[in-house]
Image 1 (cartoon, rainbow, N blue to C red):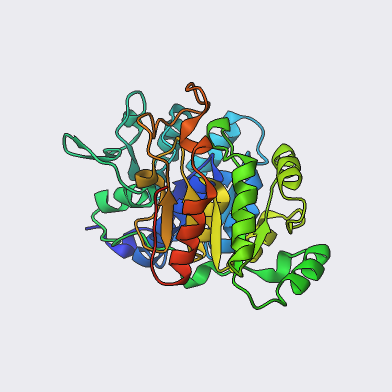
Image 2: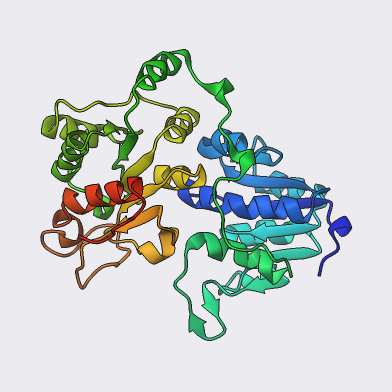
Amino acid sequence: MIRPDSIHRILVIRRKAMGDALVTLPALHQLSTAFPQAQIDLVIDRPFAPLIANLARGIEVIAWPPPEKGLLSWLARLHRSRYDLVIDYLGNPRTAVWTAATGAPLRVGYDLPRRGWAYNVRVPRNRLGDRALAQFAGEAFLDPLRALGLDPGPWQPGHGDMAVDESGLGENYRRWVKTWLTGDRPRIALMFSATWPAKAWPARHGADCYRQLVNAGLDPLLVTGPGDEQLEADLKREAPEASLAPPTTLAELAHLLSHCTVFVGTDNGARHLATLLGVPTVTVFGPTDPQGWNLNDPLHVAVTHDVHCAPCNLTSCPVEGHPCLEKLGADGVVSAVQGILHGGERGTS
């Protein structure tokens, strides 16, 4: 067991997707609990840095790319920081070099080809001995802590120090949200963004979901983000009567979601944000695996359509008709929302 007073500076490398970064935050909370005197630095991609800094107070966020010009300057900065512990959650050849450059006495990373050399604490990725594990990614992100001899317990969202800071909200958003919050019906955020074409739920299903929720006496709100221009146009065409949130920053999105009763959407970063904030979720899954990306909890329901080819994890669908999502209608999604609101849950269509 590592003595807490032996660790003064910790570096965590968690670049790339926003959803992965968000799901990693409870592990950072556990690190700060285990090493209360340590400074924790987190390397995160620049677009997500303000949101992560907002949610993980007490963590020093290093936005990537940094102001330093050139790889040698960056590596020199890492070495000068004299970290006692480094955890590399990305585990690609580049971040393996970063980890090695720190010279930290404890360097934790996944035991993968062409990068395991950088770590002196190697963690099997989603494996228990020779047996592959299919587990929620948040639990996998706690495995490096367990490899250090820590006992973080199960992954838990919604820590008290992850409350949304309202100081960064814009005036236009503040005016809009004040009006939106006046109603007393359960507020349901609908966000169908898809970074992969294969994860996109047809707009006609999203529109049907909206109408069914309205008919059930709920207050649904369509939410879109950067890059969703075509999705927004399709939703407006299918449901011109629908309420649509204004464009938001990530901080404003977090504030919006924190005031929702349930989040409904595809497997996207906003859904992970809702989970982290303690908001129940209903997620439409197609090519990605609910077992890996959906918290096993009655308040977080995965809705799927049973086809032999899913989950496939492909970014575009090679099967004619894209059956895993084209045939997944709104009925099962709305049923899952009602199940959460009434204390139960249902998950397949």
